[in-house]
Length: 123
Image (cartoon, rainbow, N blue to C red; front, side, top):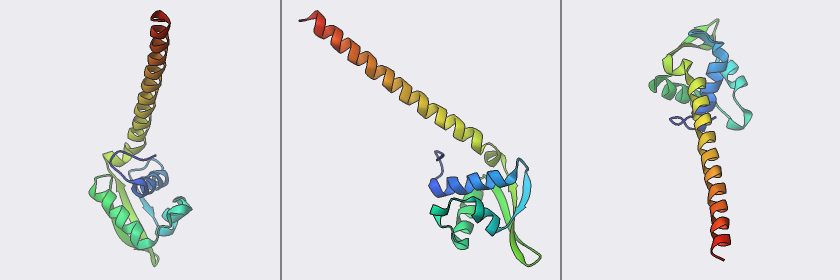
């Protein structure tokens, strides 16, 4: 699920944040909780994760603040409108891509049939 504006890693982090939010506007999450939800192939270390969170915050998906909870680093995340609509916009993008593929396939079939019809007519 790669969004038009986001690269693969940003999309994975945004999916993880959206999943951990549970539909809430504001929530607390630790870097270890966030890393546990992220795919293992991405190999996200804490500085890289913070850079990705900062870039997503700059893009307007959410606001986040670093905090301490009982000595453990914690992120306070406040989802914005773009963040709350992330899954919806991704679904719409996928639907649009599928529609384009279907139109291309139908066009190819029609072109093939017209080619055969013209070949039969002018034989």
